[in-house]
Length: 299
Image (cartoon, rainbow, N blue to C red; front, side, top):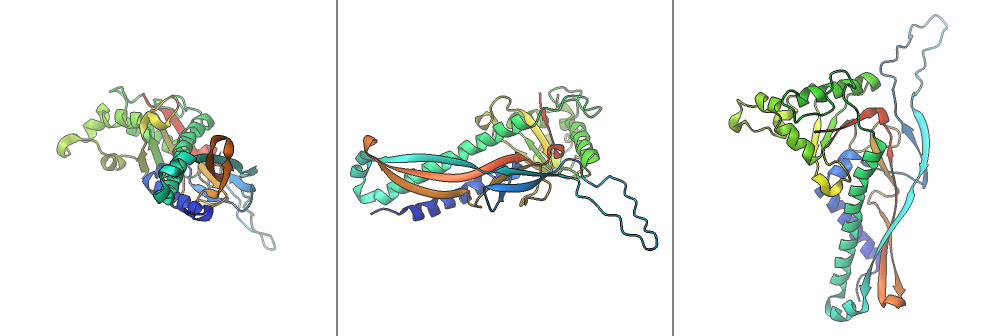
């Protein structure tokens, strides 16, 4: 008999939940924000109110100073996405006793392919949307030349954190490094000099966390498999685990449903003698806090 499409949709949504746990980088960089309709509104954060001087003295009979919400009101739409797979009649005849298992194998393969493809698309989006910050911005920043024994990565990270805080009033709370960038950081001469008296003198994330001026959540990426171009980027930014449409985060992935996949349907294509199963979903990934993120290439 096999499973009906609603059961297979539920199964695919379960695969997504399991995949998200095993691949937390997507939520770390651009967490999902469910919206009610295809057209949606959101706040695009540039410079906030934190360092704008307000006159708050109130005269007798006068009103209170009113704080304006100094962000851009923006709107966008969700884009339709779809991918499909097939079960050939030959496969059906070869798996008569295990057709439901065959369906599950096909849907699992389809779902994980969609999600892995989307993760690679996330990095392509981020690289295209955020320009590389050059050396000297801010003053003293090396531009990520951590292969040189003369440069200290911690100084660079602290300078960028201060740069974002000075411009927005929000202290960045996250740092993401491609694997190539992490290898250059952990083997940097200055870093090794800081940890030389620790047992084994090996630089770990936990040790390096304690060296920065502000607390940061660290995540190391998977290298060139998911990155087009340089696989040695460092991103310092502000983000939240469960953002909404109105709060500040550098990146957000707007979706229609929290489980990503909206629908799973089936149709028959006689030309290829196959049953076709396809998954639909809607999403749009946006930079919602351009002043809250700095990217640079580590060399």
